[in-house]
Image: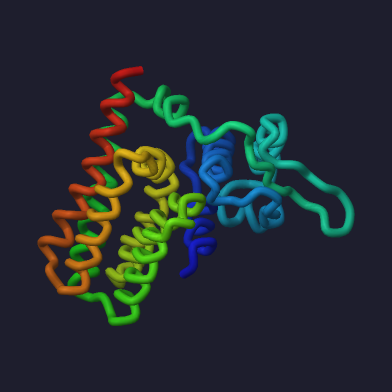
Length: 241
């Protein structure tokens, strides 16, 4: 799974049943702001995209209209036409995304994600194959490269998807994809700060080491702590707003 494929699994995972137009607008808008979707990139066709998101084409068209009004996509007609990404002039606004969430909602979402991430890491330590570990090592090395700054959010998400895939559990992997779509942008944004990057990379390395060594308890504990630390940062920031 390369970075682009992993990002698309998250961005185009099915949305919740409630407030679907708003959920699609937020999902795609976050993906554009974080660089998971590149400037000028063409979105899938309306039929394909609606199928991925689990919504009707009517709902999708409403969401695309809202994204056009925000200047995040443009629609081109005729041969080679479709919906294309337009990178925003301003970066992802973490405070703006946190403001509608109560501390209780954020903590509950974090607890859920920590449980899934911990279970996936534990099973990855038990079940991963040599090829799975090789992929984790490659992702870890790529994240440490000096020229990876503009891809760091995408690579962070990819690493966690690869850990879930290494668990050999389809359901856990699907839940990782769904939760990354919900809380991933917030965690990536708080991780991608100068004061956090070194600690985050060290946590990623400890998870991968534990998976490779087959240490199930350590893999679970570090993965849960990794998410919990990010959520605590998010809670502090939310309460300060």
